[in-house]
Length: 114
Image (cartoon, rainbow, N blue to C red; front, top):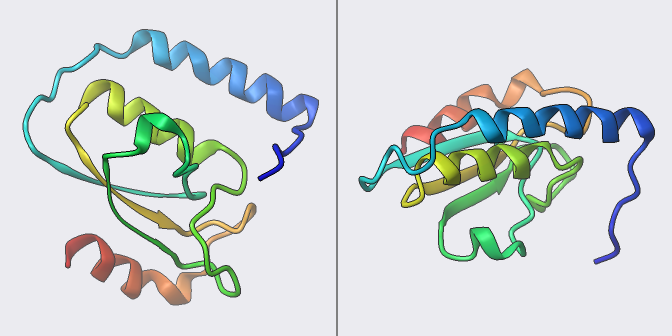
């Protein structure tokens, strides 16, 4: 997969997000937990997420994959893994890059709560 080029405003935004990485206490939640990430998807090929994705689904109409559309969901997953390294992640891609389709809210809740 070819790397997506990002705009200068996106690069500045990601740089500002790194401040939160440094502020998080590492490994605070050691137990076996599940965390639903409802965002832009995830880069499932990233080595950090190889053994922690419990389930994944796209709720974006016309998108049949969960691949991160802008990097935000992957960043959030990384933050969660830093605080809860044993967490099993439920990845729900709900954003197409700009908006969430409210018609899928019930389906998203079912995905999260089983």
